[in-house]
Amino acid sequence: MPHKDLTDQSPAEDSTTIRQRVNQARKIQHDRLTPFGLHANSQMQARHIRRFCKLDEKGDQLLEQVTDKLGLSAHSFTRILKLARTITVLAGVEQIGTLHLAEAIQYRGIVTNRDVGGNELVRWYRERCGKSEEMRAVMKDDLAGRTLPSGDLGENAA
Image (cartoon, rainbow, N blue to C red; front, top):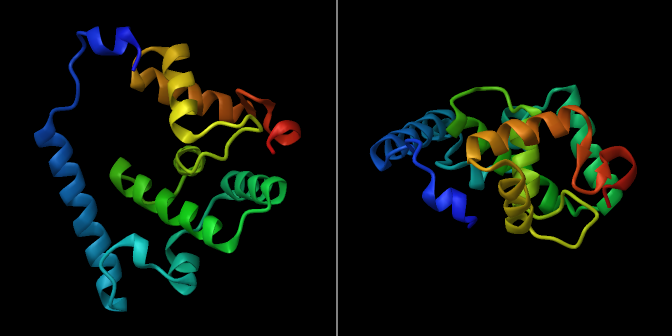
């Protein structure tokens, strides 16, 4: 973790707030999935994923590029969607956005053509941006401009 993250004086989200967000996310998952005999996004099967993990056009394009360039297995593909669904719920929104999907992809360590894992990519953004709030904004801008540490997403993601 960069030194400036450790010494940053801006208020961070406290554990009570985080706990409330997590509990709310669990309740949303429970309410959504209980009719299907499930209790968590990780348990979703293909039919549930088709119903609850719909992507907008940009998200669809991003996942298609990543899938085509990397030859993702069906298992990796569905895990990314399930994780994006969880990230979306934690963010307090219903629709999976491109940023949520990109975050799920980067946690899976497959965003760039560099041989890096998700932790290294997050570290790269933190070093570039400073605080995590700024990191999210820069990642969002990078994705909107179709650029990542590897360059142009359409050409270099592999």
